[in-house]
Image (cartoon, rainbow, N blue to C red):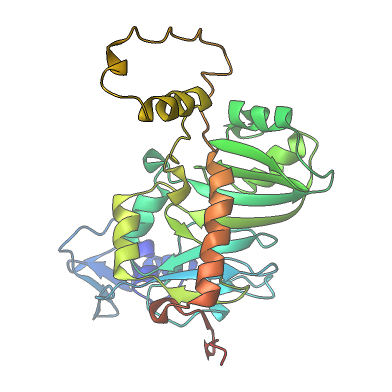
Length: 317
């Protein structure tokens, strides 16, 4: 981990200001004055003005429903509102990736640098589910196919793992995190985005958190982030039996053993329709899961997953 990143996650200051501390010669690693670009290895002793700097011992992970108009940064003189104003203060708390100012939805924040590295490293291909409302309405099937095949942007080819047309827009799954990637892809295909919401990051879903609300992830959810980066909706739904199979099974149920010795029924010729499997798409089943979960959470709220605001819990009696 780079030294300025270490200082930021220890809660000393922002990475930008940490560089100023390093240039001023106020930071040492193992009693040696550090320079810009220095790396902190496990077991290294880092000191600022002679005082040892330690990383937080207890890691936390927060799921925040980021509202529109908030900037994902600790310090920005041009930003009117920062996401860190919405969540409790923890030394070293930082966002896992970013959502631009105009984008809403699920944003994970944590003090665990290893988790951040795991979720943001390109090799892990962590999927993220988005719902976009477009100026020109429902995105065509042809455009969705193009999103999956790839759209050439200024910084290279961008692909969606999956895309499906929905009312007034599209749902799509991406594993990359380029700047304003979803907006640029859809804009290139003639569908300017009016509203964009992130619904899930890996196995963690936005659920019924309202804009500005947050909650701590449970230990089980944190473990799931480490062990599984797949969206819950990627699980294959059970397949419905083909009509002819049901008919044969029903007709044979009442026959005796003697009838079973007769010549078997001739096999029906295969047709393209008979080979079609009933299998919902990733984003389609996600919509059903999110709707089902929202109904359940409304009827039976869990005491361990209650939403919060910056000032406290938002439980209603």
